[in-house]
Length: 253
Image (cartoon, rainbow, N blue to C red):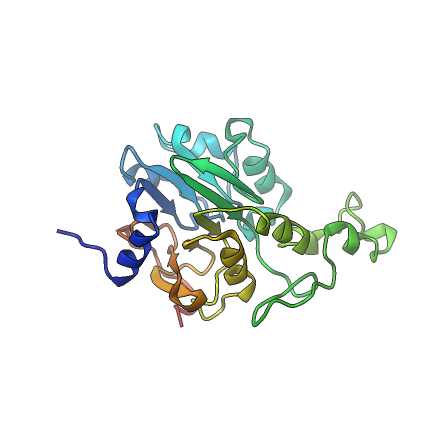
């Protein structure tokens, strides 16, 4: 019989494991068929990077998944306008995007932050640094008119985490934080995610992006972390239902 390890026991003290009916789907990169393997009564939260997709994401989901599906966008979901439209402009997914907000899902308050940190905009990797450009509007003002959004040259802005959204989200409260970018439990993680979890009062962070399954902690052990691998499925209680196809990057620290 499966029993929670030390990280799971710590999370249970905060009440998170009393509501384990959530399955997290790692980066899928064009393949969503395996989501049918999630327990039929579980909420499913996708941690970003659906792309490449060639039609609305709701049409790619297995039967019975849409009604219990939530998501955040990953960096690659902004690579092409068509990818973004298939995900963020799919009317069937209205109200299902967690990016930049907190939603009540069952008995848990769940916060989401999609995208990644980009050096030109804001890169709080080792510590919480002041942003060079707090918002997209601040960055746009520095661009020549020919390079401003609408002129076809806003590639650097796509999928970026902006301080303005981070700061607004940090004023809320949440039990669970779902991000595409990693916290410092991963070798390529960011202090900005640690601090967001701390300010939200979250006791668990779940992330994708690095295509690796692992469990760790941040904030002196008070916040547990779950990384979900490529096309992997992991439950909130830490059980890996489907191991990810590890393809790149380094594992946890």
